[in-house]
Length: 410
Image (cartoon, rainbow, N blue to C red; front, side, top):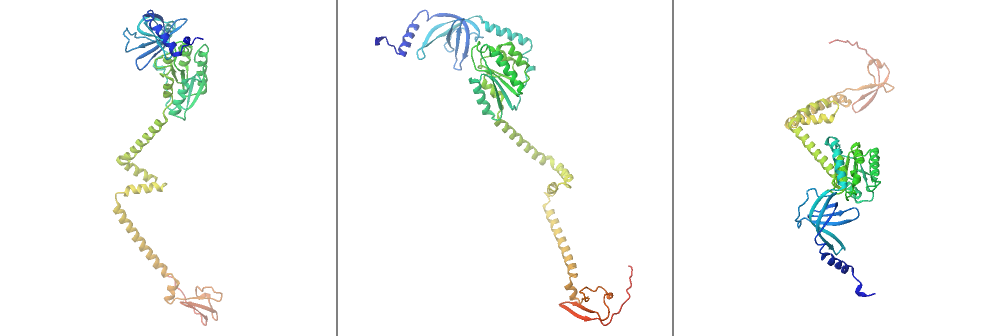
């Protein structure tokens, strides 16, 4: 093996670049084909693929250095003749056509089919705003019809959980590209509809017009239009526009945007309700201060029989500005209570046996210890006890004299 014939990767790519860059044909060439994978970047550059039935060619259009006539409807499905030169990207070992002019040949077959179906559905009213259902403000369940392993579902789940972890996400793992994709997506919509989800996201990540064609099928358009559940179409990138986007209730530029539209922000909901509560609180206080005192007094008067607390509130409202009068009335009440207490004390004192004893009053007990209430309770020779202040004395009854009592009516 001759070591001179061994190339490093860099050396080989450099050798190929020199050959291609110095080729007179490849430095000034026209290439015909159909646009696919159209991807304009924010930096002004546009990357896309030019294809025919058998091959594909990577193309780059640098907007800042482009000097040709820019085509207004330049995008996927357009048949064009491009002028430019071949450039090798040595780091990756790839080559591209650097485009400096565009001539339109016509629409591609898929683009023509897309336009034909679009015109038909538009005529039939499939895109009319009056049929667009509003998205629920506070959904509890969000259905997702997309591929289970793609970036789209990861983005949707990530955004949804971040915005509101309390929303339930239900994924129907659909095939979104190929011969079985149409039936799979339709079955997914029907399945989630039967489950009764509140809103549905149907979509996938970006791709070429061919990759996204499932979402340009008329059968899917009818299913989306007839769905009883509001549907968000989230297909491809911002520049991709499908029939499903036009028929759906809401079009999201990307699957990530679809999640943002479907799932309300829990923090914003909480903040909104707190703000409403504060406004309501301020309104109540303002109403009470400006107009509510009389109404509150009236209601308090009606409730005082069954609500001691409301009775107290009423009294505070009625007497809140009359503290001096309240204090004066309270003092008068205390004085009346004192006088009544003094009177009762005097009455009690007059009934005190000790007080009666001090006035010389005594009472008599018979032989059994019972108090003798009148003269009929004793007779001559009875032994009795006389109870006086400081003690008692035994005695024998020597004489009993009865007196007639006269009753007078006043």
